[in-house]
Each structure stands twice: as structure tokens, then as C-alpha cells.
Image (cartoon, rainbow, N blue to C red; front, side, top):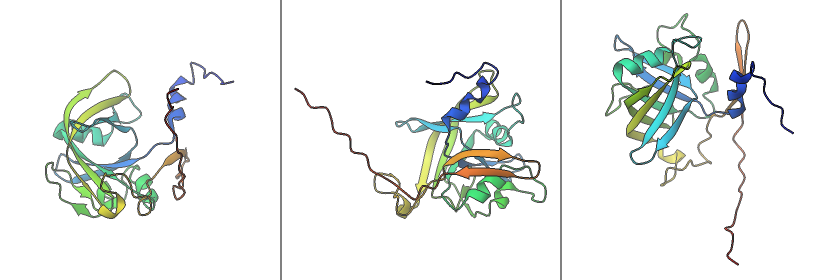
Length: 207
């Protein structure tokens, strides 16, 4: 029997949606410099035209997302798909800047020019989606919803097949299970995606 969450704990109910698949989002700062930060609340909402929904913390949250500020101003961004091996850079890019002047540099990734938008792509990621905002939704919660068209996309050929499904022999996505926050560090639990298994489900036959 399931246990009901109390009304006081209801804001934590979103944890029941874990694990998540984090991405790097790259944007342009107001001075034209490059910015990169990790996020998880992003999903596809349309195939034709290809569109995504992206939720970012606003001023009603714990801290206004710098990425949100950039997107609202510039109306464009790039979604970059990391893989296993980039866990440390992903978490570190979520921290505030202390000894680095640029979060993009902190990731250690090279830059690649985009074709349709100004933000750079991350060279170390296996795929990148150039996105242009067509509307934003502020429902009064602590996140603002960005709806955007994918205007151009790129991928590492050895990491995907001809239908753009991941090639599991060469590409293992990052899956973030949970996190712990301490005074001087964070610990994030990732799921090892090196094992796969197949499930075959036949159609029901007509009698």
C-alpha cells in the first residue's frame, strides 16, 4: 500500500520523478561571453515542428537562474547532451563562480560554432540542439517554462544510428539518481548505464 505524502512535504513530491537525464545548456551573457550550466527539467513536446519545453528557476525560487536571464534576453540557447565520464564537470558547472571567470571554461569543453543561433555548442558532448524561443510561460511557480523550436541539430555519428537512436556500444547517457548537499561539497549519485536488457512485448492476437 502506498504512503500518502503530507501537505507540508508535497513540494518534495517531484523527487518521485527521479531519475533525470541532465543536459548542459549554453547561452550568451549580456557582454557576449559564453555561459554553460547543467539542468534536468527539459523534454520534447513536438516532432513536427521539433520543439522542447525547458523549465528554469525564476526569482521566486531559491536563486534566479543566470541561464534564464540570458534566454529571456537573447531568446535562444543550445542543449548539449553529455555522456558518462562528464559527471564531475556537470556538477561543478552548477556551482557559483569563485576562481573561474567563465562557467563554460570550467567544464573543460571546447567550443564549436552554431549555425542558426549565437550560443556555442560544447565540443565534448555527443549531440547539440540549437533552440530559438517562441513563447514563455510564467504560471506563478518557482520556475519559468521556456518553449522553443529546434532550429538545427548535430550528433556524433558513432554515438547514434541512422534513425538517431543511441548506439549503446559507443554512447552511455548520464542518468542522475539523487544528490546530497554539504557545507563544502555535493555528492551526486549517477546510475551506471553500461548494462542493457531487451524486453519483447507481442501484440494481442484477435480471437
